[in-house]
Image (cartoon, rainbow, N blue to C red):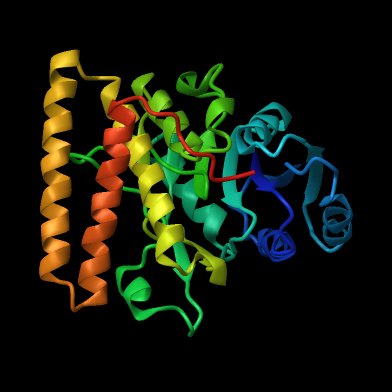
Length: 297
């Protein structure tokens, strides 16, 4: 049974530590591991690093140059290169504990499920603002909605490559620079009949870059999340229901701004409600079909 791990990368030296952590994986009985690295830079800038690190790993590493500075193209390159029954995803700035892949695998075969997701836990430097650490804005936690897992993320996932819900599915190139391409991909699979689950123990860890420890960066991420959420919802709404949703979302923004005003002397409270307002602003943008801002590339 072949399990493959996809790592899409773009000019990140942290890729070396990610690969070393994958080399320490304790595999489930009866399985083998192969690592696929998709380099999204216009030049094959990660090739030398991958070649050097691969010499120290006990598993085969397959390098793919997927130039375009579009993360969806890199993810699709991994789908094309995959040969195994299972394909995992992890980011190039994350570190996986030795039992990570085994924990995901145990859950996906137990279900059985078409895909399973785990938490990506942020690791903050001591210099991080307290309001950011308290609210933990940088961790990526898979969620259930009304008891059902409807979508997930590629920072910590394992899928069955031969599941009917993934047949012919691709990551959308038009979302490869705006973000949210993974949420949309898995939601589309869920609409096609996929069954998902969450492993609370299969965690990966991501040191937070100092450049991301700012209100502006978090706000951009929240705004994009609101757009993605709104567009997924909008696909199920009639024109009349979309109009109602727009009015409700405006009221939510007003409520969030009021709560931010009431908590103006607490940076944790004030920023929490301001960021909720930003998220709902993204939802409004999706309802009005405003073009998404490019955050990556």
